[in-house]
Image (cartoon, rainbow, N blue to C red; front, top):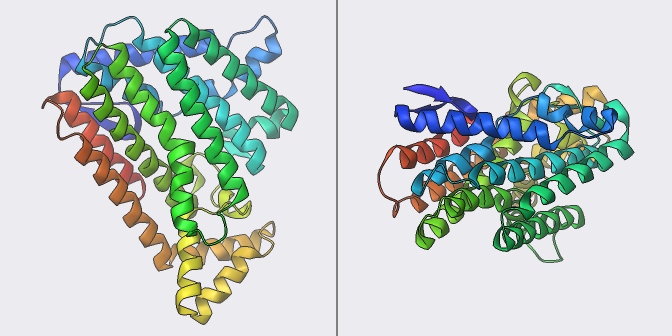
Length: 336
């Protein structure tokens, strides 16, 4: 049993391990090649987060999904590069919107070079992803463009907030389906599709990826409150400080509205206050970590991970299916 990929995923078959390791190494080389420019400064900025590492969660899913067809098909590695480049590009933009200082344990691009360079670097990565995608055929272009539309729509809906009368938690879960679930679903879809898997298998893996992606983001929501920077790779409470309505905070608000407990109402007021003050920010983090809303968010993470696992039932048994199921456990483990 060998540990590969994010979260210490254990692969129990030597052939699968070799395929995954070889594929991920090829993706890494592809990412470095795709982020090179004739302008050295652009190369430095574009490779900033590539060289910082990362879990390569989406490329891993491409490799595992490809096991349900021909895992050596030529489009698999380029498809994984496209998905990861798209993801990296969104991180540059997210950090500008969130005014984040740290990403993957290193200074964020906006901190190092300013917002304009960070945004333009994200655009550069989108362009390079599109260039690689064009070689994968019109169907791949259509799938990626639809997913990208969902991703951007999810970000806009998060920024705009829920419509009048809409439950904020339901709105937020829809947002996550677009912002995160869409691209994780595409990773699974591309892997199976490029490997020539049956259409039913492609659809099953796409639905699995959608749910796993939401669970993955919910785990990040929990980590933003519960972890330190060593665990999460970014400053704890970044979303909290910037007023981004993550699930633990939404559950806190719902509890305060439903029951009116003075301590909940007081904590909501603190959350809504000026969290640029470090002492106030630390106090809110401390109290949220002890609040039932955090545990409720953990339960939601488990629910989506279990839904993802259930989607795997029609797939043929084997080491790849077991590895995908283990990823559901790993996402839940991240959330504690």
